[in-house]
Image 1 (cartoon, chains in turn purple, brown):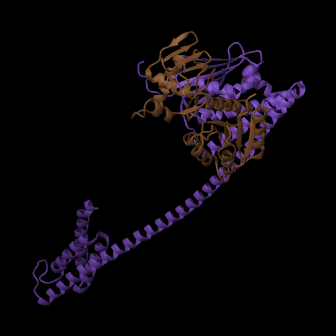
Image 2 (cartoon, each protein chain N blue to C red; image 1 turned 180 degrees about the vertical axis):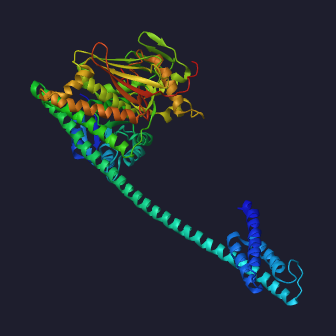
Image 3 (cartoon, helix red, strand yellow; image 1 turned 45 degrees about the horizontal axis):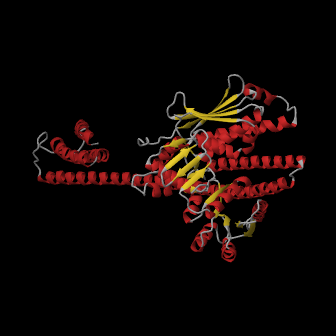
Length: 372
Length: 229
């Protein structure tokens, strides 16, 4: 802005010069020439601002004198009345140029204000929209929370009661093999249903942002032990071997989420593999990434290829029909809970037959123990 | 035949309340019920039960108020029923004076084991030699035998083991461990406790892949899981 002022002044000088030349050539009389100069000053002031206007006014007065008042081509003025004319012209042109500049500035300010008002209006519009959106979100959030709480309570309370009543049934069935088996099956299925409901509610809570994973250093051996407590029937029916490497670090996970992942993977393995085969649980440092721990659930089931093939087949029996969706859901739950624990889950073919579920979880960074 | 221990069951849901009472009776206990904290406190004063089993979330007077009220007048063991994800509630209940918690959904076997542990703790007198399966802790001589081998512990590890084993079957919070073992020394964090419990476990457990003595209670602390002989 400041930089182009000399250029503007130069242009003003050239303009006044040109006006002088044209007016002289056209041989205009004195009053007409005065008006032409005044017009030129007016436009220059409007275009160039107050400094250009002032320069143009002074220059125009000088040129008016030199070119139109006798004696011509000198700064002298013979007739004193012409002094009055020149002074009047100077004052007029300065005042006019100032007025023009002021008017222009005000117009600009008005325009600026208009723009600001428009911007504010747009801002307000956006703010109102956002507020409405947030309000809607909050309401749907509150709805989700209260729904979750209600669903949680209304599903878990009867399930807990069913489990207690089944326990009574089992006592009554003592000595009656068939009834005992039925009661045991009800207990088993109820436990599974409770875990599923629990898993789905956990996922919904995470999803709704009502619960965030709360990671803490957790030893893999503790996770495996807790899994055993959650799946007493699996432990009772088959061999489960556990190996945690001596140098295996703790994992930094939400213990309840990690436990659910492992429980689902063990259940999967239990349903996939013949009961006479063992399920192996391993925990060790990740082979390539020092900041991860790898937990593995190994089974001697049909393996990955077989289970994908079976999926395409028409279910041959009621067991198979019930089995596949159950395995699918359990795996999906495990996968999404693993992800929520900043981990990853991979199923790979096990050499010699079967499946390895590889769960990679972040290692905990614990301070070194003081030397004993 | 000794008198069966009397257990007060407090839950607002009748299905769970009656179901629990029936299971406790089936296991040989005498059980009575209350449906909220106020009713339960009246029962505690009237019949002085040997153990109180209470839900935390109840309309009217909740489980926390009940724990405080009971602790004002009695040392009756209190076992709390809590929900998963309710760890802050568990810690609050323990701080108010509850002795243990069972997390829903729980199995009846698990519940009965906790009840047994509490009743045993409240009846047994203080002893200087603690005996568990394959583990003997002589508190006076500061001598620990696991199976046939002697376990050498640092003073900190010994103090940790003593605190956990004296509270066998009962959860000990990380804050309690810092307060008791480290005397609240500044700079002692939860991770300090974890590191020392880690080394204690490595020395104590015959198979670290399958801990037999020290179990962790996520977000709460640790629990000595072996049953006293």
